[in-house]
Image (tube, rainbow, N blue to C red; front, side, top):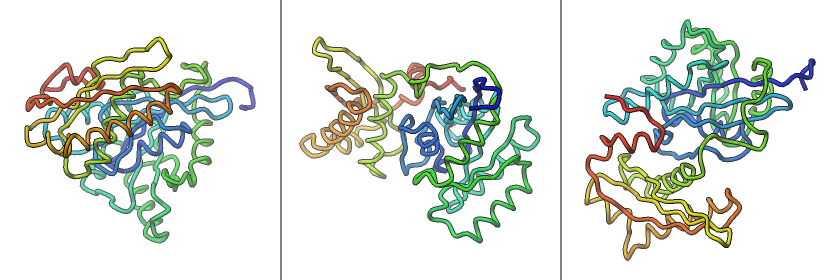
Length: 301
């Protein structure tokens, strides 16, 4: 508990280049899965809030899309969402992958952070697979480019160093009442969470076979009299040639995607889940304003 015994509550924005491990770190801080993860870059699309608690402090973690050079409307909307996620934050965590580094995307981020009023914290991730000397050298180099208040070395995957960082973050939060109930871990609705879990399975099972331009749309979410839940979703792809990839031979692949999604969603909700998937081809889905609203992005021209 804090010395005064009062509660604390604040906002922590988590930013970085694509695939730096932001969502994995948010999940570690929360203590359970609230954001989907993938080895595929730019997995997170919209701002997602995870809720972490340390003693009498509640931290609202804003997991943002990776910040990169946008080319398409979807890219621009994602980058806009990332920077908006830092507004009104009590602290900004810049998560860096010291292995890949992605200097071309990291440099503009450092420039944007310079002079910002929020407390800035540098988080060097993936220390479990990084060599010590280059890691320390990188930390010193980045610290010279932006005035970071703290630097942490963690592994979001294994949890190394995360507990100490969480405790320190809690002390930075301002005194005030909690904004969410103690047992709530995310602001995502069950419908959005279900769609995100299916999208994660698309990435995990299809790897590089399916391009980035795909989406999962919620169609219906029905609670049955027996306590189970019926979920119907639409997998939207841009080209006819992608349909056989998602369906697989004899519909085998989409069945495997559905089974994995159903199992995970059932574990999260604590009730049996009946999941129905179908595939729709829409070459202009990335220009559909309604889809942007569904996945929590602003329409960016």
